[in-house]
Amino acid sequence: MEKRFIDNCPICSSQEEYVTEQILSVIQKKNFAKNALVFEQEEESRGLFLITKGVVKISKISPAGKEIVLGLLSAGKTFGEGSLLGQDRQADTATTTEPTEVLYLPKKDLQAILDKNPLLYQSVVASLVRWMANLNNVIENINTPSAKERVWTYLCRLQTEQNKEVVQLSGKKHEVALMLGLRPETFSRALAELENDGQIKMNHKQVQILQSSK
Image 1: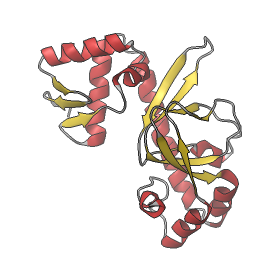
Image 2: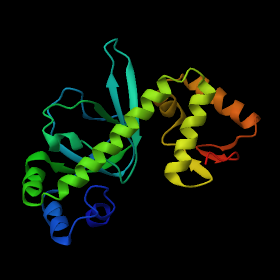
Image 3: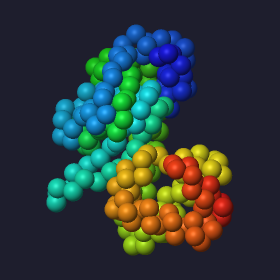
Image 4: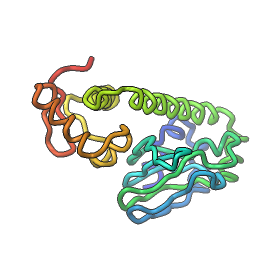
């Protein structure tokens, strides 16, 4: 199973077979219960994590003590990449929103593989660039005053990422609401308004985009 998920890993999948074998030799499987803490903001960086099952919420605590949800990551996604590029402390907090399984690559072991295979750094940097783009989207959401417009922008982005007419929300509704900086009831109301306007059709966590965002 580890080999199958390594092959789908956005960082490792483009590597030669011998690099994959080196990664497999140091990988560790870890299981977390729902609402478990994987790591906390300012905790020592330990390594790279690849989700094989479940959902991990990446968040940050603002100076005012408010939780800001930066992303909801599902199977096939990685997090903790900063530890491979000299980050000593975690910039964010990672918690599970459901029972979750991850493959963990300790920082020291993976650093040794990186030193032997410099091209692997390109994949790590590319992953961090994608994460920075995600942070820009979070900032854009916060700066959009209209809840309806904020939700529509999020759905349009999902459609682009998933390349489907019917998209799957990236988490439970209250989790997505947090990520968009909205109250759950405000998020639900915005979805209802979009549906009444004929822009979407809801089916639980699935949303059919009726008005193309492309």
